[in-house]
Image 1 (cartoon, helix red, strand yellow):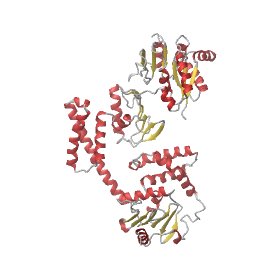
Image 2 (cartoon, one colour):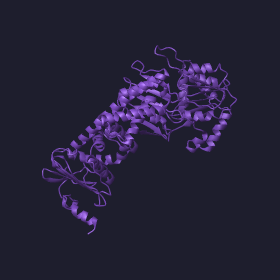
Image 3 (tube, helix red, strand yellow):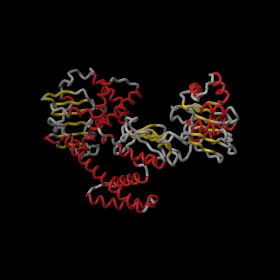
Image 4 (cartoon, one colour):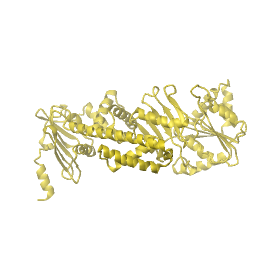
Length: 567
């Protein structure tokens, strides 16, 4: 007899219930073909599952319940919008619970495992779950989406039990606390993955998960104590020898020596990857910006968005995605914010809860903290590209065609006044920077920005940057002040990073008085709306001009409008 046949024969006597052996009615009392409200919601769950789970961070199961609920709720909203689905508040609550069970529990089995009246759970196929309740077999309306979904829950069961289930080890048979037992078969030993769980009134995996969480929590506490101890020792070394801050290799050597001693004293076993991760974390805390440093060093990340200590999103290749990066708590996040702002001469507190700043590499930073931010401290960093985009890059990315690129190059060289419009993060500043590269090197260029982002390569460039008021409310220098002053600096061209208010009038007057070839950007959904916004911004200058005069100014000043849109 072959090994496969012997295994099948031995498993036929393990108590697994097959479909043909069970003829009980569903728990809901209705036939499986008649979908109840929950059945319809499970269909929605199956539709949005990949979108919801795919948007959660890799360490989502380690998050607290409230932050995780908020993440799941946002993910459900985004998934439903993407698929054009409409759900009511009570349906949303049901789906949040379902996905909470997917992340922290055992998916469709979670409510059955927690039911004190259920003594046995049999999964004969992804769409077939039976339970034994008070001696009676009943078919559940709840189900798995497919075999992949079922295998994911089987893998979690095996992980909790410290076991393995796959094609090479297709059988799991383990005792559970309180006299229970779990049996699992997967292909090739079974046509489809199956589970049989004998249980008492309590969830048999709850105590195992609690023990595991306690061990993880103890290890995390121990690692945190090591982190704090090592950080204090390294800071003492740096106080004695400040040159260490410039010598990363020496600092790393000191860290490794101190690390080995701490781990030995506390009798903690860490893997090689855990040791390396902790060392990098400490170096980043001391020399960099903590958890944000790895994202700042990643060349593919163009924007970093921190929504409180437990949510960090990034933009890669034009797509926003959540990361596994997180801060320990709000105090940790505030400490990193202070570390960012202090060398820049900036501060943020309850009196000044919003601040804009620029990192030494040119990256733009915006910080908002409570009480005006309800999510906790929020940080947005738009990274400064070390290698600015060129027109060839935009063509290869599909932003514009070669013919459009040639036309825009000719427009800049012909000294046309250009207005670049588009929505937030549509690439307005990027295009402005690319077009500026076509300005001849013998012209005097003055750039004016709220936060300096432009990277012009010409020699004769004067860069001006607006300044907010200080704590006493004085010392403000606006974009409009800088545009007026630039007119006295003998510019050939004026480039304003973005027009937002009354400076639009001064910019139009500059374009109409001999400063051809000037360029600027404004936020607008389309070119027609851009012209309307220009009118509004001119009125914000406080000049009592008739609309006809404003429109004549715009018509005489603007030669070309280039609109950017995210597709």
